[in-house]
Length: 427
Image 1 (cartoon, rainbow, N blue to C red):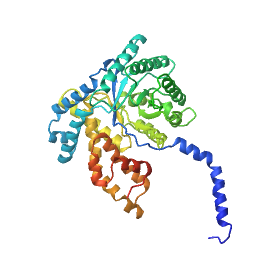
Image 2: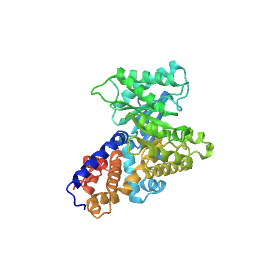
Image 3: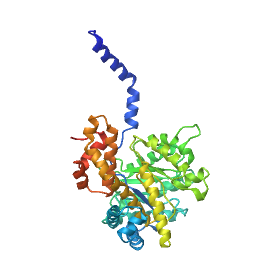
Image 4: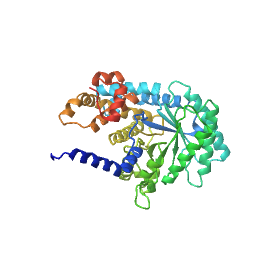
């Protein structure tokens, strides 16, 4: 220690100088990397073509998924064998899947006006948008309604830009007439190629909010973008365009959704090898993951087009493939994906619940003993955040109850949320 009377004053002045030097950098960090706000993330997004969507669609998806489960894996031993689970875990997971399909089969509903819908006349698409909006309002009044809803419009490329705006307008106008939009409404923007399109989408949402104001004032209209073009991952100047997109969203961008088939086709992968686990897909998703880290923008993996239909052997094979891909995504930090068919809900929830139930005991014990382990230098705040995030994710989707978590960790939902944000475990 330097023995000088003015030493501490020198340190104070040094710190003050560094504060001034780093002020801009500090402000950018706080603005661009605000962190995870802890809101619930759905485990999947179910895409339904707009012309096929009706007020009974959600109920039908649930009943069809339950029927598939009853037909192809009705008993716990069969279910456990299909999904590679032990007898005890298989019984637990099957019971949870049955309850989920009965009570809340779809967590995030997206009414599709893009690839799954096709190209139609303006008058036809307007009519379908209005009809779908009326059906959605009816769905939201039912028990078991999806907690997250939205539409996928066409892209903001020149040839479909006007059509995208028209569809959004017809849908929101009809939804507004039927007593206003839901608390949170999301528009999925496909085929994004630049950060400028993200900025334009932000302007579009602002304009619609001005036209349809709601109280209290908030950003009730958000959007997510699909990552399905190579130039979104790597721009002509060699930069990661997707990182620019994340920050161009100005807090209104909710998520990045990987587009399996458009992206792999665009980089030259032949149809037979297009899959969520292709190395080209892994590269794109790794860039997405880094770009979104610390921003609060959520990640979603894509879909599998191997649908569980046909003979029992074909259904089981499709379930096993899908469940394996879901688990792979979960292990890599992608906690959401797309589902295109009602029977995929069985394998979606089977894989998701098994993932959370298998880690419940170890992660609960580790979080409960975190303070002691941290004092010994064996844990860091980042670990506490990860443990709390894992348990909160399982709690949100129904893999376990708050009572189970509290019994094992002493923490309720609100305490878990605090740990998830701050990495500080209450004593």
